[in-house]
Image (cartoon, rainbow, N blue to C red):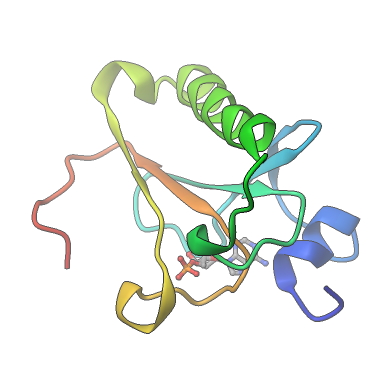
Length: 114
Ligand code: AMP
């Protein structure tokens, strides 16, 4: 997608702080962190949101959770715990229409979420 910010990052057209670069998934540091650790786990394929994930996407989904495990361990937040969040659509607060999971850690998280 030409005008998608995450596609531009994946293509290398705009800079980002890359934490993990796998076959199907990339993890970057969020530009506007909401916690001491705030990363975005992004499939390289342009998929707009969770309800657009096609059947047969098992490898990509597996790599998402492998990347979470690897990054959480690398950053040490696996010990204290962390939160993963997917925003979708207007009420979900989604700003970028390219599927991504937020990986947040380094402080206690409140519940219920805002
Ligand atoms: P969402 O509201 O779930 O769509 O989240 C989009 C996230 O992308 C926000 O947390 C932004 O801070 C983050 N973001 C937007 N542009 C960039 C960028 N160029 N590099 C890193 N993070 C970004």
